Image (cartoon, rainbow, N blue to C red):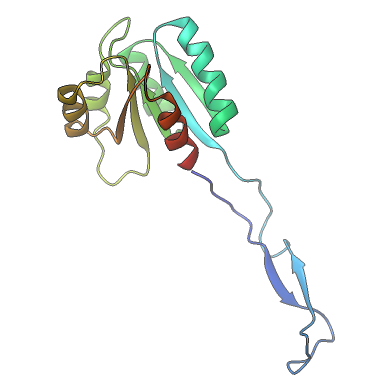
Length: 156
């Protein structure tokens, strides 16, 4: 999710009159305090170190995100969700301890702007339906839909 705190705007330059053609305007950033665009903050829930490393690199490169936490268990994911600022959580279903379904159940939220994406090797129709019913925004197969996952992440 791209956000911005400053507004770039046109302001009438000093000495310009209403009837001037072309109007004399200056382009300025000084209207509001300037802050940079914020990158999407991601929590990655994955228990295999090799996948953690490659997926983190792919997300940073392809989707320009900031990975704020990489956790391996359902408990760590729930704790990270409560203590870290995040925009998107990427959840694997089968973890070292607990399951991604337990994470989805704990993260059920009302009108939150945070997104939860499931990335798994077991993306059957039944699993997809169960994840959606528990509040997942999308479910992707790691082996076949990685490009779609990265595109979804990049688009916010």
